[in-house]
Image (cartoon, rainbow, N blue to C red):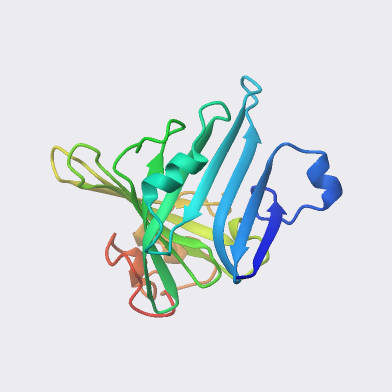
Length: 219
């Protein structure tokens, strides 16, 4: 197996060795055979100048165990927590992962959720569940514009679906990720968005929290 390590900032920009030596805020990305296996997000808070580490681990080997991975990377002294992605599924160029969060003591934190990534490694779907019942709590779908180097600069709209545990109701909002067009709703997205009439109707994946995995290669 071929292993490659990259160091980036939190916006996925590659850091030079000189830049890496001058900062404590960086992301260490480990690739195995060209696939992202682990991310270590190292940062220091402005509030109390405290260092933290967040490890994201992609568990795509059935021989690997979530609890063992959590015990290996969670660390109280280093303030290191862990997120494990597992149960990988693929369709139409998209990848779906189940997600479980672990606190610095290695214990599960919350009920987890799911995430979907496109072929460029950009997140297009994320969800969380109620810890008490495992029911769906919230969903966010991300729409991207033209392809550019920085994925976060390319993010266009966030579609938020919130589920009320008591009433079963759904609250739906759309936000402009980079504050280019201000807040939008479905009825005026075609008017406000510069790509013109019919744009909303041509992207049905974002009209609802379902489906999770896109059913077509283009969304």
